[in-house]
Length: 238
Image (cartoon, rainbow, N blue to C red):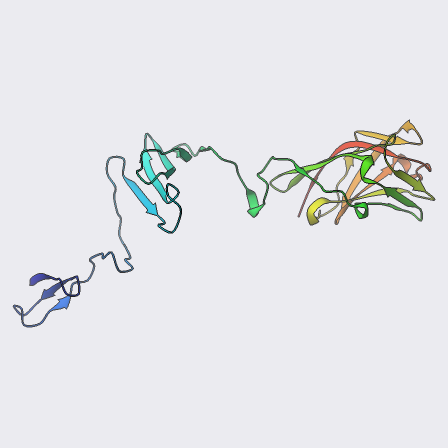
């Protein structure tokens, strides 16, 4: 078999009839073609694979994957490849180290970071026939964080400042779960500090659907006035 490089079509060719007929030689990778590597490829002695997106700004185009020091490194590189911060490292025992943060399920806030909940009067209500109306000045704290499918939601409803009025027969204070999250229910959480009628009382929270219902022990009605809550709810989300 004869072989040659055709500078016109920039391909390697071979001939099985001493040059009378030529065909493109298969299984040779080309820069201007889609190449499929179907067998093992080895990179010896700290082998490195570089990726470059030339549409991006200067010094923000290159990534590297490299085996080094008993670990697999995922790095970001400058154009001259002299700066290589270790963005992510996998070691041989399964540990993962990263210089950034972890965003689970395409969330916009990194796992374990607390997010402020904007005030909305519709997020607070009373059930049982009466009403509970809360103004923004009475909400001294309203934030949450997620770890996997567990929500930690801390809330402080003041009984001594801002607008906070309960009227009529109310047996549950309703707190709408932030950002559209829901819960499978069948859970309970204890309120850290509950104030009813100016007196500290035991309260429990029951997550269900898109809200947490807070009730007094025994399911009795809340006293008219300004109930107070300082707590961190912890429950499973869907």
